[in-house]
Image (cartoon, rainbow, N blue to C red):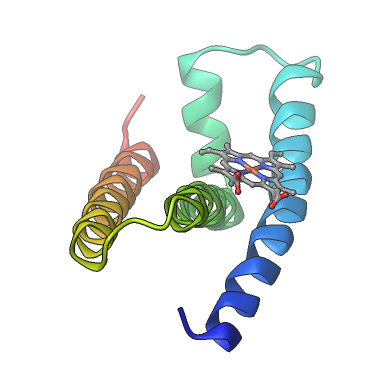
Length: 116
Ligand code: HEM
């Protein structure tokens, strides 16, 4: 692994960890500690009330995926697999990441357009 790239990955693992704490705190405070009613309708209405929520959860999705998958990549590197096996695992990570991203985005956009 190119050491400059390795340094960026290391740094981004920490940056995304901090972002996750912030995003998670906002999510928990607005959903679980607000004294508003909490049901399917209120969640849909909250998401649709403002573009910012779509951007917020889109960011949460990207940051969470990047952190988790980059973390798993780090674990793979620690085990020093053969080049072929490592490339295969990287392919699986990319594939999984793309599938989960598209899936997450579809869910988010379906909430955005949902009629209650
Ligand atoms: C608020 C939530 C989270 C925080 C604060 C956090 C923090 C961190 C930090 C600081 C590291 C670097 C550890 C090191 O290199 O010594 C790390 C690694 C990692 N994180 Fe997270 N994380 C969070 C959520 C998650 C989630 C949701 C996942 C899974 C989807 C995840 C998966 C991983 C993995 C696989 C590693 C690599 C472990 C390793 O190198 O041995 N983390 N996390």
